[in-house]
Length: 427
Image (cartoon, rainbow, N blue to C red; front, top):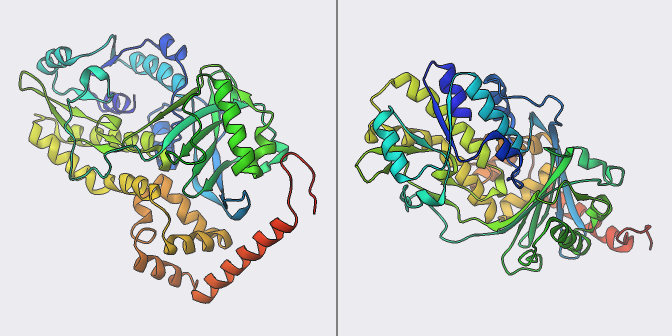
């Protein structure tokens, strides 16, 4: 959608092929959350694809780091430099198809296989594939040099809910992240749902085989939400009161599964020898832990819309590969960010998180990584650079020790003054 709108604006003739009509998209089951961060939100708006002014923007993120006994070790809370936005992709795809057609694109409905791609490649200056459909499996070769993983690193569950208790947790007026390292990460995202409007999309990532890995037998939204409530009561009790009254926005707004992160070579060769370009998840598929899927695809579409227009053709396989390599010079940061978060936090990263819990300016710079992953490098992922980053902000060893002592005192206080799930504070 984004690439089509950008190319239409630049004067191209565009054909957009979709295996579903706008009505099919609206009637589809739930789609991934696809929260866009600041720069990507602005680019969609610049292209005139911002059709939901009533949708809530996420302007802050509150992160709670939990311990194994359900206590909150510390929290990080800070504003985003630019608001983020998560709109139901069923709405975005449906509206986008209609919009690009109204602007002059030819919209063709139907499944596209390899033979169809060959036919289209013969009659168009360029064919771009942005979907990883089963019929196209193997079209884009795995890039072993750029791919880190060969198996899923998390099991995934997503559900959209409404009816939650905001009064119990006012932090949920904005984005909330709940992390129990090595076990579970939960992202509670302000969301504009097709059926319910204002809602929350809850994205859950669990360590395979761990004590939160309980979604395998889920077959419905209600079952999945019940499992999630049980996990929250046991492992993240701070969120129980907020979640307890929640219900699914519809019977189909849930997903479970797993993803193997992979980077593929950007040019696929067809049986005839003609070639196509891959963009988005078709060639760069990241674990959703860092929220980079839709953001990465939007950045890629923006880059290639500019490059294609500047070049004008012919779009040879070597030229397209060179352009992708140029994009990767910056684009790799999204994959590095995603893969980095899949690994356990280092001691230096824990110190940054602690400092961010006390210093909003540090937290704000941390959150900017979701919008621009390159802004986290090298300071969040290289120990020497991390120490230098903290030192430049007048955070020394004694400050870190003081933060740690504060965390210890806070945990002791929680143990002495424990709040039962859904109950009243007792000693």
